[in-house]
Length: 294
Ligand SMILES: Cc1cc2nc3c(=O)[nH]c(=O)nc-3n(C[C@H](O)[C@H](O)[C@H](O)COP(=O)(O)OP(=O)(O)OC[C@H]3O[C@@H](n4cnc5c(N)ncnc54)[C@H](O)[C@@H]3O)c2cc1C
Image (cartoon, rainbow, N blue to C red; front, side, top):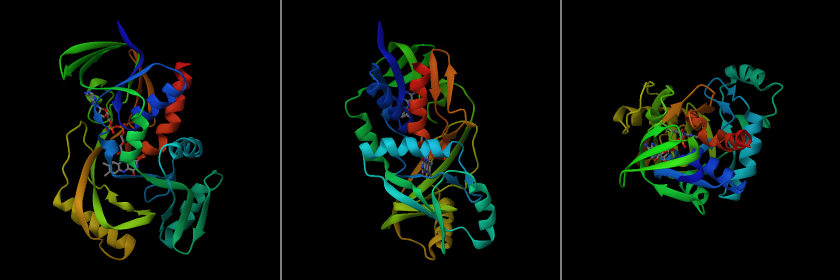
């Protein structure tokens, strides 16, 4: 028997945005996940259209911004604005990249202020998105087309009308799409940063985050290393002029596929591989998935 018209594997930001958008469009959706989010439990997430220290404007940034501002504020507060303290010598190159793009911004003495960027607390959002959806907490051991083989809590099979794989880094072996796995950490700071700032590392809310570790070719769970803490604090000193005090750390693994975040797989679609822009792109790609299915 078919368990649901659409079965979404994964209850991170990718899976829950997709499930919520499909559910609101009247589809019968079942989410199957080991737990509520994994990498998506990064404590605070930036929604940042201008990436890295080079100031590359994210592909489809205008569409992604429109989709996320239409979607997230219905569920949780979203804090507006990110300040990018770009050194004066690099500003001409950044200005060139922003030319002709529809990204609202201002150049201030301190750097680039992105007024339509922002940040949010992730855990309340994941809970709100899951509310009212049908979710089974179980481990998928194998995926064969539209059949899911579950191993916990008890061996079972589920068949779907259509499968959407949104299992992120830790489930990537189920679909074998390759990609890069990048570990990283966030420190919980005692100080609260209502204004997000990002250059090298970022601060937003109680988070100091960033990543300098090399990519892996497969998923391995990550734990914060002392050298990472030192790197984060040294970069924070460049960003803020001092080392913020901190009392706990969170570690996760990003999963990156080059741009093909929505692709056909046997039995349905994979919606994954957003790297560190998952919260930025998830609402846009959830709508793209709905268009594909329709
Ligand atoms: C240090 C750091 C900082 C970051 N900062 C940001 C940021 O500022 N902004 C941003 O947008 N992103 C950021 N990210 C990236 C972001 O956290 C993740 O890329 C993103 O949340 C991944 O979402 P996802 O839904 O694809 O996967 P996940 O959140 O990993 O969800 C995967 C889901 O699939 C389930 N699953 C996996 N395998 C199985 C299985 N076999 N059976 C059943 N269920 C399974 C899991 O239980 C989970 O529910 C950061 C990451 C790191 C490491």
